[in-house]
Length: 259
Image (tube, rainbow, N blue to C red; front, side, top):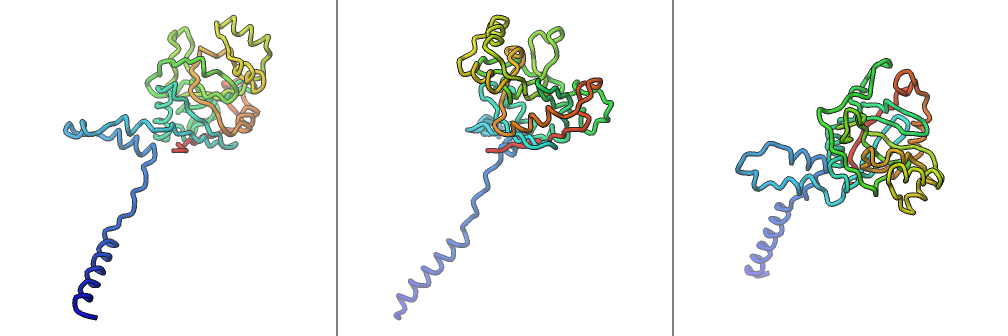
């Protein structure tokens, strides 16, 4: 082997070695909650113009939420047509705001309610249902979103003190409800000035729900898995003298999934 060939081989060896040294492990994609935390970091004036918060906080596909309870798991999707409620709920989940809370109000055939931060480790005689952040969320009514079984909805104060029907900053409920008849739906349409689509009527008759709440409480998501868990929670023994709180606490932990 002449010296020229040997020199070429050495050069090739050096080149391939340097390539191996400079190869980098691809960065792991940030989760939605990590992107949200990054977007909310304080930034100086020079970097503000370079940072596009909307591209960080608004995912291409809205993530789903996993609600882990002591009676099983529920998966919910959030609606993009209620962006204020969607973004607030995602923010609270990312902050672990709901972790350790309980479903503090449960009424079989109606709904299961949670989201009160005061319910964390609350004694059995504690008055619950009034806790939450120091803000409310403007109502986002949409006739496409109705109170079918599995609807994820925002709780709120009554009309006398809350005529604009603004939602609680954190408290929510999931509908159980009952199946309805055409006669009942006709009556509901007349009372509330609503015209249900054929698909909504069929769903109310088969899945059930609570149509008397439509246009009064914001529906901002729906259950996609864990229907049996709704029924298990709704069937728990409750104390009516204590705000329909389950005798045995049903605890909650939430996380963002499907990112």
